[in-house]
Image 1 (cartoon, rainbow, N blue to C red):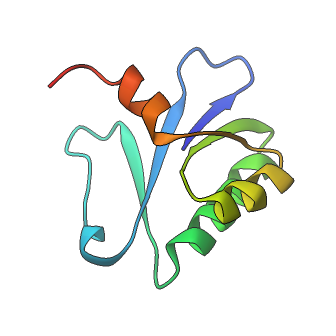
Image 2: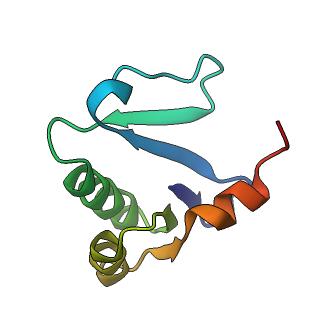
Length: 91
């Protein structure tokens, strides 16, 4: 998910990990990684709630319809994985 504070030119990027991905980190420090204790979806909802309370616009990348609904209720924008793939540099 990305958070853009008002007046900021670049988004802050937050990634929620779960399972075997927990422990992942960005060696360059450009991405904040949140490790889900048990439920990845709930960790995303909690993270969105925290970000939204700081007057940020938040965009979540997910294909999960249930998660989409939950974060949209909090005011987050949602895009699918194909949007993200289209915006990443080629391999």
